[in-house]
Image 1 (cartoon, rainbow over the protein chains, first blue to last red):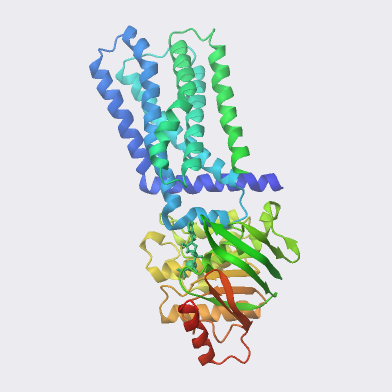
Image 2 (cartoon, each protein chain N blue to C red):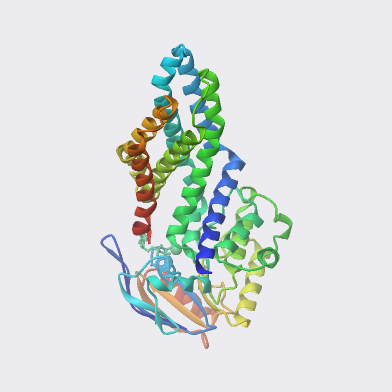
Length: 222
Length: 233
Ligand SMILES: Nc1ncnc2c1ncn2[C@@H]1O[C@H](COP(=O)(O)OP(=O)(O)OP(=O)(O)O)[C@@H](O)[C@H]1O
Ligand SMILES: [Mg+2]
């Protein structure tokens, strides 16, 4: 009963954030614009042949996603600052971890939506016919995005009260997110090259990282 | 009943609250005044379980407040300096959201009832961003009473209210009092809540300078006390 309410609260929090985002589309438009620029610039800079595509595509894909996420997710915290809403949440019988996981869920859904729009464009602009395991690619994308969202949301929550928070964010985010980036790029490259075997170490790294950043906030915010 | 014992709150290297002791009886109505920076809001935040005191304790019905007593928040309604409302959501979306946060049943009915009480039914589906200061304050009051709290903590709730809204708030305070809710009201205008209050507290530089029953105090005494408080005496 108790846990059910916990999940309901997380969902209500995420729904509220998504509703706010779909009203203004601030984060989504920044993320989409950034991704589009990356796609277009690189699709014209390199003549997309199958070989160049295989070489640069995985890196580009994640470069685009992570920078888009970095720029976009910051905005999803703005709504909480207006009128001191975060204080209002803390007045309610809501656990701090529920507030945190609500943010993670909303940010994850947001980034997945952007990715679902951007990913096909990548394939179109780079003239790349995906053969091989689509499901593997999808899993790698979801796990990579989740890892990134978890790390960034954690840092945003942690630095939220500091005046220097905004300056510190990139400084802390990039080193912390490197394992996710590397694992995601390696997985994407392997899957696109049609060699999904031999990737198990990268899968393990990515899953482990996701789990760690799901667990760390439980200790921090409780 | 709420008992505050030897409360001290240190922020930075400043004692914002020093040696604060008082009791709020169930169903009592306390008006708190004091100059800017006296520590009124800080005291309210401690009563609202938002911050913990540096030392001393708060007992609610004999139970000391600690990390495990978060469920007590369900019993507390707060009107603060800010509205805690999402500018991008409508009135009804805001209150429904908070209803879920408080784990309420029958949310739509409660939301409409709370909004009706503050006289905002006409703006139910307007985005809060378009609200005037007074409308925002009315909705903030609706938000505070949505979950039917037994203890109401109000920090300068008259701010931004027009005459009519002021009277609405006075009427609400009256009915909350009749319903047996405990009320803790911070204000700057000594006339506010004067006729309803049964206890009067003056906070100066983090100390309770005066705390007595209202009975026997005339309007002039009030004025005097508030002015004394205002001068930091
Ligand atoms: N977060 C904080 N950081 C530093 N100082 C603080 C903080 N919060 C409060 N203070 C200090 O504590 C003192 C009391 O503040 P508080 O907000 O409780 O006063 P108040 O009585 O509510 O004043 P007002 O009538 O202006 O609302 C002030 O001197 C203020 O500077
Ligand atoms: Mg104050």
